[in-house]
Length: 165
Image (cartoon, rainbow, N blue to C red):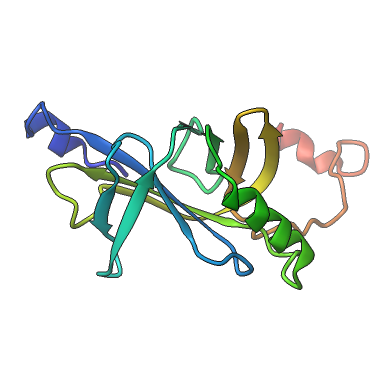
């Protein structure tokens, strides 16, 4: 949940930094990217370690509701460079090709880089669409419960359900 009290009583000149971390088991390193700080920034994660984020032009579109388990973030990366597409190819060719890349999303205030104001951790990259100048990633929460009974409940088979309709 965002810290609304901060925005109501804080310095109006403070900037909210939007950061993403993309990682996969087969990649050479996790990619730490900041959207709105051209010089890059070093922040402290919730585990206490400091990480350097580099600037890459990207767009971040969060889903409509962040209070439930169906979280979704769409990331449009403007410039992937030469190394990132090679990392994707290496992941497809590795023994870990069945594992999807993971996205961690964090928001920090420029005045306090020691703790994130908002974190969304462990989203899976479900869709990847290369574009002419970059790529678009759709990241969703892991589907934990996909089991269904296979039975449909209708009024013909279960007439006592009529009282609940």
